[in-house]
Length: 86
Image (cartoon, rainbow, N blue to C red; front, side):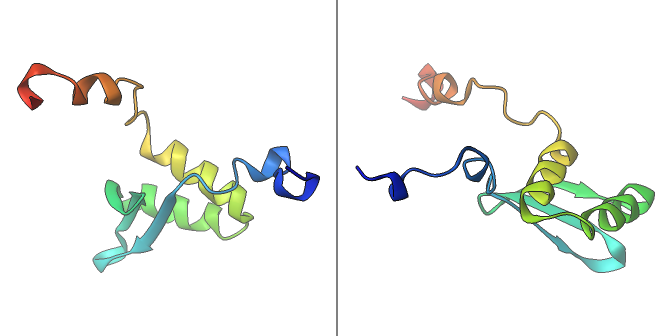
């Protein structure tokens, strides 16, 4: 393994898998790895759009992560092993 294959520490968090698009009536739809996880409406959507314009890609990812809230709680693997899924 050479040094050029190891990412810089801040490059590890640059892409967290979030994306957004602006929908009808100014709705902001935030997705994580292609799955829609949050819809922002009204003032919240306008504040989001105003803030994201001035951010770099890593900052955009962090803002979208904060806007989605705590939708990942760390128990996804255990939930997949639940008896209802077997």
